[in-house]
Amino acid sequence: MKTKKPKKELTIDQKINRRNFISFATFIGLGSAAFGGYKWLYNSPIETSGITGGTRKPLRRALNKTELFFRNFFSNNHLVKTYPKSMAAKVVRHNSDIGSEGKLPPENWKLQVTKKSGEVLQVTLDELRALPKTEIVFDFKCVEGWDQISHWGGVKFIDFMQHFKLDNEAALQYVGLETPDKQYYVGIDMPSALHPQTLLAYEVNDQPLPGKHGQPLRLIIPVKYGIKNLKRIGSITFSNTRPRDYWAEQGYDYYSGL
Amino acid sequence: MLIYWANDEYSITIFGHTFVRFFPDWYYNLLHIPSRLAEGMAFHFLFMWFFTLNGIFYILYTIISGEWRQLVPNRHSFKEAWLVLLHDLHIRKTAPPQDKYNAAQRIAYTAIIIMGIGSVITGLAIYKPVQFYYLTWLCGGYHFARIIHFALTLGYVFFFLIHVFQVVLAGWNNFRSVVSGFEVINEQPQPVIETPHEDEKA
Image 1: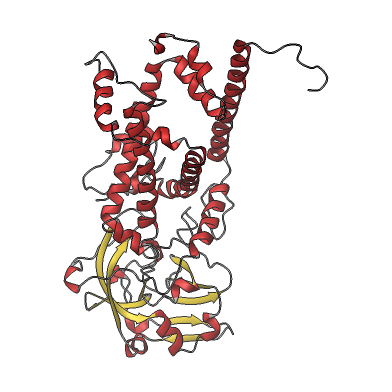
Image 2 (image 1 turned 60 degrees about the vertical axis):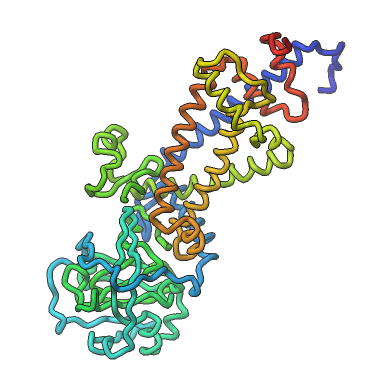
């Protein structure tokens, strides 16, 4: 604005007008930008289906970045709150049967653990029962909003890993678990899997798991929402990339940590 | 108390549980928000950053600029706020003298900050109840934190409605000063107010 110099002082009214003009232009500009930004976000394309799916691309990016931020706070010293047994629900809530419909005779069942080398371990329930048993009474939390104090018993995932000498596998970043029929599957980051309260559970309320709670073996991982607590584990794999995850494919956060 | 996820922006779900029906079916159908929990959560966990950062910047701004002095209630505010309320409800004719903001505004604008801080804390308490167990404890447990978080959200809705209603009542000149007053930080906002009515000085 060097070309023309102001000939005379602006009057007060002119100053007010000018200031109002600038203010309102900015106000309307920012307002439209915010509205436009929201519209853009709302209409942004859904991510291509892969390990995750069903969510708008920018929102998925935000979920993943948010995960990275909050992972900094994760620690094995942060334990989920536990309760006395007397507070555990007698009737444990049953929400979904995907991948674990019907009953499966335990004799036929063997846990298939695929090692890094490709070798497959076949683990029987008795082998797991022979390991030290850990019980936990905690508040099971669902993304839907409900939660319930429940009582589970089984072997700590970290004890299982150590007993079967899966140290090389524990150095990888993810664990993938699937039901025998492959209908339900979850991916868990290794730190959460090795958390001292993560169990391969075979008991609920001191009784063997009934069919609807994942007979004969299920995952109980209190540092995750219920969607990650896979029922009726058929196979366990390890990898450095995210294993497929049923609910992450449906638009939920992959991490879903608590 | 399953009121909850059902109340994120735009989302909701709870596949047909019957508890206290906080928001009956017609409400969801009206807003087209049944069974969109995943979507709602995704929005929630993005916008939480905007709201939190916006709140932090706003608080920093009021501190650095010294504007907080205009906003924090002083020892007369609670009594005066009552008089302002009576005046606004047309029960009293006169309102107590005020600075930039009246006593009721001071209380409201400070309360909203405290509510915001409360939402962040209760939000973290239910978002990561294991990692931030001390926050969850501080909020009286997972359930209570959820209830507070939800109640605060309802509080914002009422704040918003009353706020907009009051702005409309206060008229165009007031609105103009709100917008331009934000822009002009260092100059005195006097000129803007001066034009409309002279009766202030009386």
